[in-house]
Image (cartoon, rainbow, N blue to C red; front, side):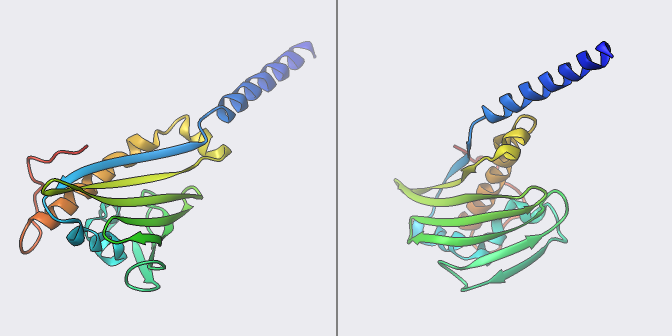
Length: 192
């Protein structure tokens, strides 16, 4: 009986320590990437302010070619939205434009349904940088208990950041290439 009690106390202690470690994880998360593009903000802004245009350079859209996508609301601006439902890698969710400041900002509310429920904010900003425009893609939000627990084994920045980089490179290709978009990635791209 004493062995059982010791094992039970040990298990309870381990669980208590794990809960304390999870609770002490950061409540906020942020993933950010930027790129300089040789195009004015006025030309780049519409590519984020319209969910259909965003799909042209959304790296997550290429992960699951069979992903179901539905657009709703106006074509552009506040209320324009798209819903996706794909494989386990892309999951299911909805992005809805919640704020715009032409030609500097497009802000989306994001709701993830699966594989993990959650909410975040995604900002696309367009800032003049000499003859170029610095485009930034930022996702931020709050971690609940489950988000903190998942954060112990999965690094959000390491998972999502490289996809943001791919998307920004694709946006650069679209903006800087006259005519149809090229099939190859440019060799000289600076990701900030």
